[in-house]
Image (cartoon, rainbow, N blue to C red; front, side):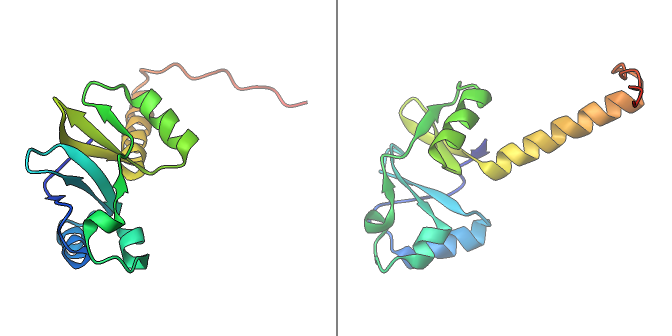
Length: 133
């Protein structure tokens, strides 16, 4: 999960949202109220395509979200089934972060590297070679 270092308010401008995305090098930002309650989500791609001037007019209202205790596997399954590349993470009704497909790819890469190192170290038994016919 990537924690929210920046969030938007519904009345922020689309220009401000794009500037924040560039500054923080992210493709998504969460839209929250003053109490950090999740109101929506905006994507860099959509903001570049929209003629909206305010975030409230460009955000995906009521985006899919998971709790901070949610397991990764069902979250990934939902993302794949729904064709979404970002899921908000909420704890105690407050937006605290998000999981993106990039986060999942980085996690998968780390797991593969760990398995490769374990295999080289002899900690993972290798299958017997299969004879070809």
